[in-house]
Amino acid sequence: MADSAEAVNDFKKSLDGLDSGEKGVSGLKAAFTGLADTIGISTTALGVLTAGLAVAVAGFYAYKAYQQSIQEKIQNAQKASVEISDRTSTMADNISQVKELKTALDSGTLSEQEAYQAKSNLLSIQSQLSDSYGDQASNIDLVNGKLDEQIEKMQQLQIQDAENYLNDNEDAYQIAKDKLTKDNYYSFGNIDETGKKNKKLISQLQDIAKEVDGIELSSNDNGSMFVHFTGDAYKANDAINEFMSKVRDLKNEMGENADTSAIDDLLSSANNEMEKATDLIDTHGDTYKTYLQQKMIKDGFGDGSPKAIYDNYTKAVQDYNDALASGDTSAIDKAKTAFDNVQSSVDGVVKKYPEYKSMFDEVGDALDEATIKSNDFTKALAGKDFKDIVSKFKDLEDVDLKGLNINGKNVLR
Image (cartoon, rainbow, N blue to C red):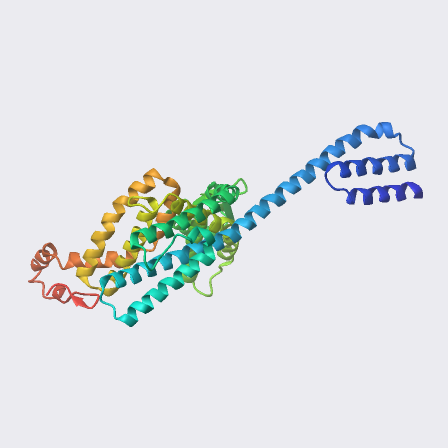
């Protein structure tokens, strides 16, 4: 029996040392042969089992190698995304500087010293391009060349850069796209519906769920209420986060002495589910976004191109926010008109290229909607129609509507 036990231990050690391929299969055969000889079992009887396990071992290591290759692609894409984003940002800065410097030189208004400095700056940028792009930048002459031609050549470098990135990271993008855009099911919470103290809480949670798109409450067979959401990682992250914020507000309203254990458990389990979505975004988000950005660049910079409209939209949102912050009504009206004009082009791009919708949505989300609504409200109160309504109440001495003040301005006088 001692010999048999020792043989089994030797057999286990042999299995631990196996690898994939022919070497692993031959090692498996040797291990079984040694075991059979020791414990007196026919190797013929073990042959079928050996063959079956050999296939299983080979399949396991093949899967393991596949998973490793996937992980390597993800990691390489993450690194490449950081690098290409830096190069894209640097090139955008360079193009902006070249436009400014060339325009100043062409104006003929610079002093001799100022012109010399401008040319020196252009040569410095050209040297940077040569360092970064090598022979691809050899035909660029920022000092003597025409502005439009030099900008086009610089953009061509970006296009080539983008093509290389897209070719190298196609597989990683498809993985990221699948992980981030696929609908997943998220569920959390386990509140007893039979307890009297929880009935009010469940009613309040149902009201909260109605305010958060996609969040639903259901009951399981055990008489417990749970929360669930079905959607992609981005939507899940936003919805669960919004739901948690509202539940925290509810908890704060309950006061320090209230029993909030059910809410605490709900928030804890909700956070665990949200982290699943967050992990997907953290792992694949940069690759997904960078790939789409580079695809835009690869499609060109011409008027009407997705990239041109994206840049115009980004600028329109920034200008609109700046105007709103200034409070200058004429500047706000001008910025709004520019924004509305670009918005129609955005709608056309998103319809034709739906893959870019998330990028345009992200830019649009930066718009200060709260200030826009406040500004619209103030304009409405200052309008003729509202003043006519107020005039009908002039005999109501206890209502001082003419003293109405919005954002420090008396809108009715």
